Image 1 (cartoon, rainbow, N blue to C red):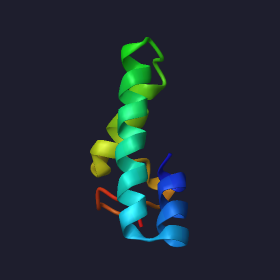
Image 2: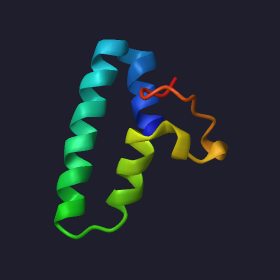
Image 3: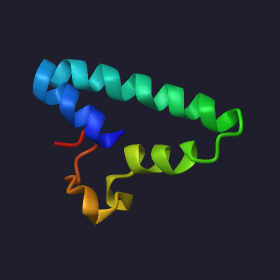
Length: 65
C-alpha cells in the first residue's frame, strides 16, 4: 500500500496522494473490522511511520516519499 501511495504521489501530485491515502485508510479499516487480519498491519504501517519495515525504504513522514 505504501508503494501505491508513492506511485500516486509521483504521477498525480501530493493532493491526489493524500486523497488516495485517506481512501486506503478507510478501506483497510473496513476490511479489518470485517475480519481480514492482514488489514491491521497495513493500517499500523500507514498510520505510524516508525513501525514501517526498513526494507520499504519509506521516510518517517506520514505520506511516504
